[in-house]
Length: 183
Image 1 (spheres, rainbow, N blue to C red):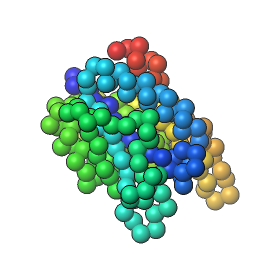
Image 2: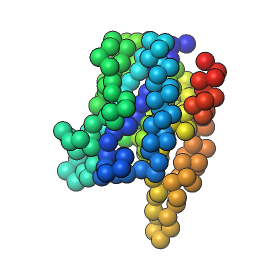
Image 3: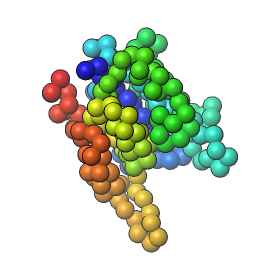
Image 4: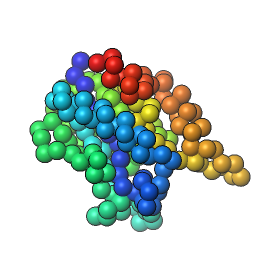
């Protein structure tokens, strides 16, 4: 089993002062830093996904802005085992080089974390499983936001729990601590 860490869209616009602030993104960031440090120590493949908005009415992740930059706590290193894959859609595989990077590094298992749980993490995890990758999703290494439908607001913690519960059909959902203890 050859495992890679997939860090999805941990970008400045999701944090305080950004144009699409999430609920407690720094909590997820702390967990992501822990697993990133473990992957760096073991020399395993790390893929940073960076969303760059290309649609005309986009309000965040605008090209060449501070908000679209990967958070400084996770600055990718210029090593042969760390990659940045840019995407323009929620699904990290859609019209990107992600599949090529994973295949060229003989990856068959993914540890997934990042932002937003209900959008990019969801679509990427489902696609990864459908492409036959064994997936572990670090639930506490993900963040989301309140969602609104008609007159109802679904709180971020409920959105998070619901999406993680649904994603159990596609990934082994673990806490970062449980994952790290198992290694």
